[in-house]
Length: 483
Image 1: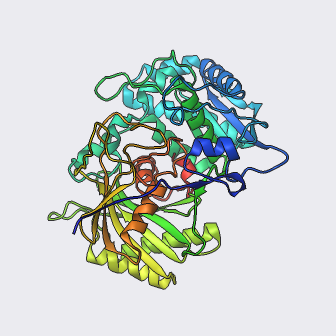
Image 2: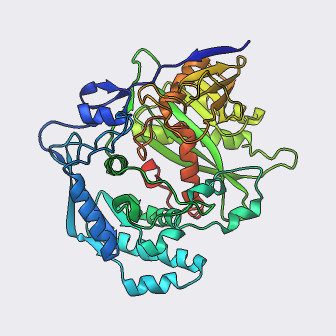
Image 3: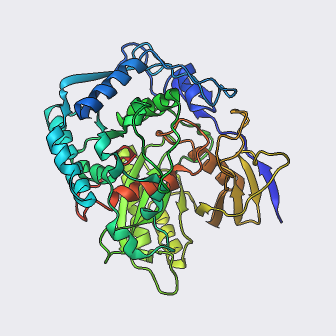
């Protein structure tokens, strides 16, 4: 029997244990989750780029210190002022950029690289940038190295309009994945062995007059207002410096849980069709990335599945990595998977849960739905609208009209998520509340109405990077190396 329900907007926790539904207002009012009284934090930065991009980045960072006014809007909660970044700002942190941590690229070498074929330009471009990152890292190891992508290399960056080429999609031909190269993710894979987080920056981030990237259809991409860009950029740097801006509010009366996203991605090696991976998160959003084994697709089932043993090993390894990072195991595990569970997978996952001594486990398939709901008027359903089709199948609007923003902050008709319960010890409503909260663990975007929970969204980002990491090479466990 169908049932319609509404979930209220999840609160997040900020400094001083204060709570708010909105990331930006929460930081502006209370400071980040781990902000401390007294001496402000010093975040050491390195910068790589041409003289033009380095100057542009340094000038924008300096200009942002005092804050940036929001654009004029009838939705002030959607477009708030950026309060600045410095010792006296809500972040209570300051950037420290030593002259030895700034490296400029050779314009002659850049001209030589861009004169080549696109494939060679990507390979040589990422190699040139990686060499400069390594030089900075070896001389002083800053917390984060900002890589100012030169205008000449912007076209070689990852095209977000073609994101499906990194995430497993059974409707696409396997050969398509063998020739996909992009500068951003090749560079992230290359510097992973250096244990050095980086932040790539396009010219339009700090210079609205710069030529921007175009979509796959050749259309000019919309540019966020400057205050929003500053919010997103500085929050990402704060997170990559290993600090925490916010976390999900946890009910102390409930089992401590960890959330695991299991998905698959295409490898560059055409002989290896699909590789499994797991991302494990706690309520703080501290994630651990685990790469599993390669799997083959069956002729009668184009969805990838793990064997019983591989499922057991993947979840066991993920839980052990969680214990290594947190010094304890959770009492409950929640698994989000991008494809249906086979009998062998459920047996393997349950075996891992039993052997690790966990109390409860919930296993769900989380995908986007093509079913849409409609409400009276011109606006889509509210974010948090939940439709239960039966005991196992449920729809959840993670994007939609947001009362706090007083609008629907999207351009297209939103699609709800569908989550299908394969096995659960927890109520569907509670599982939906957790999914909604997990959409707010996104440190690249401070607008809180994310479409997907971090367990599934990160799969795409991680898969794009891991496909360039050869088997046996270093795989960094922290999510900050992939975002």
